[in-house]
Image (cartoon, rainbow, N blue to C red; front, side):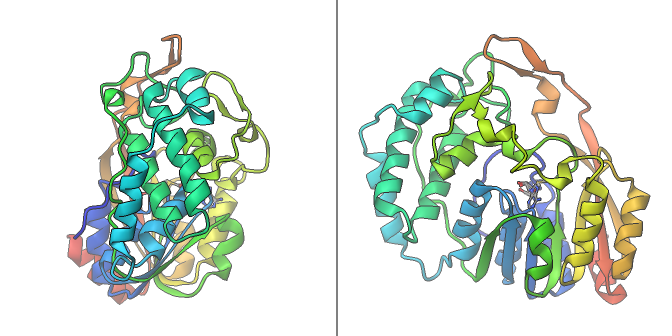
Length: 352
Ligand SMILES: C[S@@+](CC[C@H](N)C(=O)[O-])C[C@H]1O[C@@H](n2cnc3c(N)ncnc32)[C@H](O)[C@@H]1O
C-alpha cells in the first residue's frame, strides 16, 4: 500500500485507518463514500482497496486533497510533468507577499524565510497552473510542505511561544504520490449534498463532534487555497469571514447537530455505513445507536485512542500566554456499523 503523507488535522483518523481498512475490505464493497473526508485518509484507504470512491467535505483545502488523491488516477496521470513542475517551483527566488505578512510577521505560524517561499510558489501556481490538472497536486504538495515546517500544535488558532524545531527547516515541495484508481471529489455542505450523491456499497461518516470549527481552525490552508488574500482579525489572524454566518456548519452547534446527524444518516445512499463518533460529542452512544438502527442491523466498536497533541501540551499565543489548557490524554472512539446483518458479521469477524 502506498503511504501518502497528510497534514496534521484535528479528528484525523490516522490511527484508525488500519482497523477501518480491515472493516472496509471485509464488507466486500466496490464503491465507497467518505463523507466529511478532511485529509482524505479514509477515502484513500478505500481507493487503495480498489473501490470507486467519492469524497466530500466543505473545506477548500480538503477539495484540493480530494482532487489530488481521489479524483486523479495515478496510473494515467503524467508523473514526470508533475515532478518537473515541482522542481521548477522549488527553484523560484523567494519573495514576500500576503502570506509572509499575514502568517509570518503579523502572526507566527511559519518563519518569514519559508513564508517568502510559499508566496512565490502560490503566485506561480495561480499564474501558470490555474485550471490545469496540475493545480490540485501542486497545491496539495505546497500545503504538505508548509505543514512540515509550521510552528503550531496542529491547529491554526494559535502558534507556539518559541519557533518549533521543524520551522527552521527549509520549505520544500515533494511528490504528493498519486494513487491509482477512480474517484470523485465533491466540495459542499453534507446536509445539502448527501441525498444527491450516487448510491454506494459503503459510506464512512466522520462529522465534526463539537463547537470547534474547521473553517477557523485551518484558516491558513483555506486562505492559501482560495488565494483571495482576505482581511484578518485577532492574534490568530483568522479570515474575517470566520466570524460570519456563511461558513458555519450545523454539525458544530449543540442545538442543530443532532438533527443534522439524523438527516445525514437518513439521506446517505449506502447499503452499509460506518459512523465515527467519540465520547466527547453531544450525542450519547445510545442516541447514535438509535439513529443508526433505522438503517438496519447495528454493531458498535469502541476504541480507546490518544487525543490530538494540542490537548496534551497546551497552546500559546504570540506573547507567550497560554491560551489552551492541556486536557485529557485519551478518549473513546465509537464506530457504529449499520447495514445488512451478514455484511456486518463479516466486518466484525475481520477485526475480532
Ligand atoms: C472529524 S473531521 C474528518 C476527518 C477525516 N475523516 C480525516 O481522517 O481526515 C470533520 C470534517 O467535516 C468537515 N465539515 C464540517 N462541516 C461540514 C458540512 N456541513 N459539510 C461537509 N463537511 C463538513 C470539516 O471540514 C472536517 O474536515
